[in-house]
Structures are given as C-alpha cells and as structure tokens.
Length: 187
Length: 148
Image (cartoon, rainbow over all chains, first blue to last red; front, side):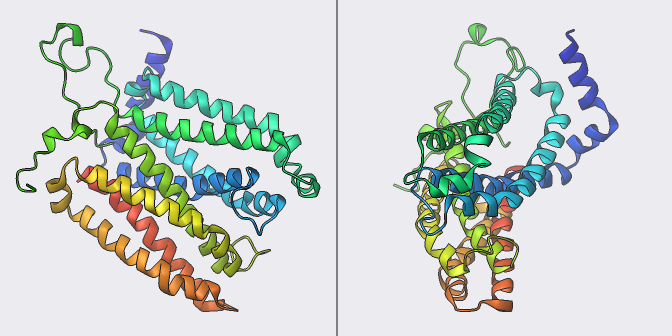
C-alpha cells in the first residue's frame, strides 16, 4: 500500500473523523456551512473580478471594492477551508486517489500562486489602479485567471462525488454487459 | 403528458456530465446572487462596505443579483426535473421553496425599500439579518434534501 493510501486511511479511521462521517447531522451541517461560505466568499470574489474587468460596481472604485471586501473574503475563506478540511478528512480514504479531488487541491495551490504573482501589481496596488485612466491589462488578466481557477475548483469539488474508483462497484466497465446508468449522487 | 413523464428518459439521468454540470451552474449562480445580496445585507448591518450607502450598493449589485437569480432558478428547475416526485415529497425541499419565495418577495419589496431609504438605521439591521437568515436557510435546506 502506498504512503498516501496508508495516511488517508489512518486519517479517515481516527475516532474523530469516523464519528463525523457517520453522524447524520454534523456532516450535512458542515457541508451546508461549506456551501454557505461559498455564497459569501465566492460572491465577493466574483464581484471583485467583475469590477476589475470593468463590468460591475460602477460607483465603487477598484480600491474600494478590494479593500472593503477583504475582511469578509478572509472570514468566508477561513470558514470554507475549515469545513473543507473536515469534509475531506472524513472521507480521505476514498478521496485521496480521486482525480477530481487531486485536481481541486492542485487548483487551490494555483490560487496561492495567483495571489503571490498578482499581489504587488493588482490586489495590493489598488490605489494605483484607481488613478489609471483605464484598468490595466494585468488586472484584467488577474481577474480572468481568478474566475477560471475558482469556477474550476467549484466544478472539481462537485465532480468528486461522481467519481467511482475502478472496481469499486462490481466488475470493471469492460467486463460488464451494460453501461452503468448514471444516478445523481447525493453529495 | 405530464402524468406520463418518466424521469428515466430525462437526459440528466442518462448523461454522465449533465447532472453535475447543472449543479455547478447552480452553485456558481447562487454564489453570485446570494453573494451580491449579502453585500447589501452586510452594509445594512453596519458590518462592512461603509464607504458606500446601502442604496448605492443596491444600485451597483442589482443587475448581477437579478442575473444570478435567473440562472440559479433556471438551473434549479432543470435539476428538479431529474426526480420531481422525490423533490415534491421532501420536507427539506418544501422548506427550501417556501423560504425561496419569501426571500425573493422580501428582497424586492421590504429589503429594497429599506436599503434605498435615506437612513436605514435599526430597521436596516433587522432587514439585513432576516435576508441573510433566509438565504442561508435556503442553502441548508437544499443540502439537507440530499441527506433525507
């Protein structure tokens, strides 16, 4: 067994994550909190990106949008990540080799890179952007990339629930007589 | 015709990508609609975006809220067709729809009126709190539908 598999099974097997996984109430509540914070944090990210692209919040300056939403983005981000860690931990034994889970983690890593790359020129430089005659290309690039990354993370996250590990249910696809009917996964 | 409807014939139940794609659109558009409404709510509660008045924020977000709501409801209706009876008989789903109707009416009547008033004050705080509560309940009820 690989180290990742062993580690994942150990995490998911701890008393804490076992009871979380088997709890009929805690798990859906944490998932709902995860989604609620997406509404808050995701909404603020979308609006900031749309403002940088020059299509939303016309009466606010770029620096107003960036600095005034910063605190709530951070709060939303912390709730979102905390809930996400709990959700992932509870099912890490089935998630660690799920390609959509791996994609989601990779994209989250790229969000960190995005922040490092564009902090100086865009997000930490908002006052300068206000003085510019037009929103500079680099700010629009940052906004577009942010939209792509976050929509990608959202989508990969949703697709985690639909992945079936080969051989997880019955014989592999090649051996089965009929194609499996897709059933909407509950989560 | 409606009586003869068989969800098994619905493309959502026959195409591997259709259902999750609808869900992604649903989630992204509720982030847009609820997120933009929350911006106004936070202002009404005095918890952020103090440089603008609530009225200004309503004007600025109006179009995006409407766009988000339109997409979230459309995608929601499409998802509903995947298993109408299960949705119809689910208490969580019924709660969601009741809260959604109240939240939409509230948003375009009381919420807007108070946000556009000269000094929303205490009424503004109350309206912001009710609005946030309603929208979060809708998200929770939507999730609990899947678990009950």
